[in-house]
Image (cartoon, rainbow, N blue to C red):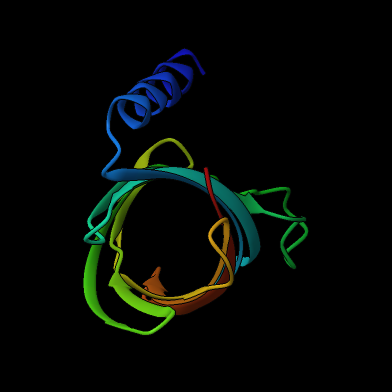
Amino acid sequence: MKKLLTIIILLGTLQFHSKAQVLTGQAYLQQTVMGLQNGYGLRVQTNKGLGLGFVYQSNLKSTTEGLDEKYPFYGMELMLPLTKCGNMKFFFTPKAGFTNEQFFVLIPEVETEIKINDTFSAAITAGIRARESATGIKLLVHL
């Protein structure tokens, strides 16, 4: 928790000192092979679209097997812009981190972001998690 707080303060400081970057908070739902998961994150993004952020996600409820596994995922995401068309942007957003605090995983993902206004955006994601498809929706708040 102390490391997470340090990272948030560092990202906030970077945002304060640079006008060419945007600090973005995100909340999302994702359907994975482990079940429906919710998550949140914080990322710094340049005006050209490159970005780096930290994410956390876990299951909303117990799995169908009756086990109380949350499958928590803590990690980083990298944003690489693919193309832009009006209010829509397309990104390749690979994630890397730890599941259950012991397994290192890489998650390739693509994201389509639709700008609602200067503060809010919505996004649709598609990726591969545990060799199965994972789809999701996001609400992004540009701080």
